[in-house]
Length: 393
Picture 1 (cartoon, rainbow, N blue to C red):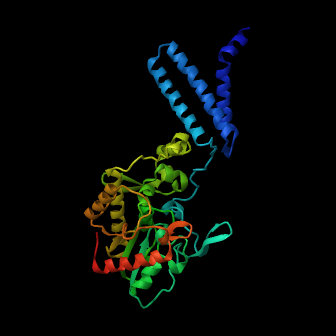
Picture 2: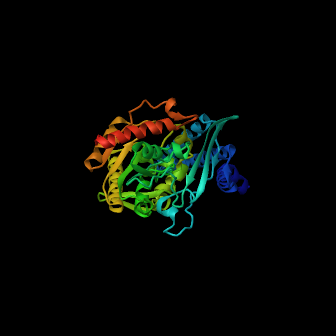
Picture 3: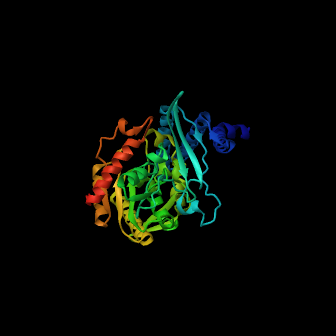
C-alpha cells in the first residue's frame, strides 16, 4: 500500500527523470523531434514538482528561480513548435591529437600540398560553375604566369574572396593584380573561410618570405567585414566551422595567442556548443556576443596592426595595405567608420572600396554571392590605381 501511494504521489516525477536520462543517453548521432519533445515535457514536470515543493517549504528564492526556469522552458517549447519541431544533431567539437607544431594547430585548416581541388555547383541539370584550384607545395593557391623579369611582389592575404572561390586560377584577384600591374608577381596566401586571426597566425608561424623570390613589394590584406566575427569566434562561427581556428586574446593592450578557440577558451566554447541548437537561439537568430562594441573593434584593429608589424619584420618592409573589398554583408556604418579610424590611428593604410560598386548579381558568380572574374579584375585595376597614387582612406 505504501509503495502504491508513493507511486501515485511521485510516479510522474520518477518517470520524468527516467525520460530525461533516456533521451540524453540513448542516441549517438541525432536527437529526433520526438526525443526533444519528451525531454521538454519531462523537464517541465520535474521543474513544476520542485517549484511546488519550494513554495510549500517557503523557499522564496528557489521557488522564484524555478518559476523563471519554467517560463524559459515554456518559451523554448513554443519556439520548438514555431520552428516546425526540429531535431538536433550531435557534432564532434574535440581537438585532434596533434603536436603543437602541426600546421593545423598553428594556423588552422589548410589545403593539402601539391593538390588540385574542384569547386562545383549545379542547379538541377544546369552547371552554375565548375572551377579548379591548384595548390602548390607550400599549401597556397598557384598564381599562374610567373614572370622572372619582375622585381616586385604582391603578397595577398584574406579569405575566399582573395583566394578566389568559384573561379579558376587565372581569374582570381591576385592573378589580375599581377597581370594588370605589369610589375608584381602575386602570391596568394589567402584561404577560404578564414579571418584576421588566420592572417596573423600565418605571418607568425609560416615561412612565407621563403616562398617569395622578389625582395621588394607590398602586403595586401583583402578585408571582408565577417572577418571580425570570425576572429572573435562568435557562437555561430565557432559551432559551424571555426572551433579549431587560432584563438587570440586582448590582454594589457596586446594581442596574445592562446591555442585554438576550442581549447583556449574552454568555458565559453562549451557554452556555445550547448546553446547553438536551442530553439530560442534559432528562432530569434541569436549569436553571441549579441553585438559588437568598441572593445571588439579595438581588438580587431590591433590584430591587423600586429599583422602589419609581423609582416614588416618577416618581409623587410612595412608596405602593408588593407583593401576593404566591395561589400555584400550588412554592417552598422558607425562600427565600420570606427574600425577604419582605429586602423588609421595605428598607421595602417586602408583602401576602402566597400561602396565602390553597388554589389549585386552582375558582380557575382552564377548562383553564389562570391565575386565573379569580372569583379576581381575591376577591383584589381582600381586598387592598383589608388595604390600607385597613394590614395588611402
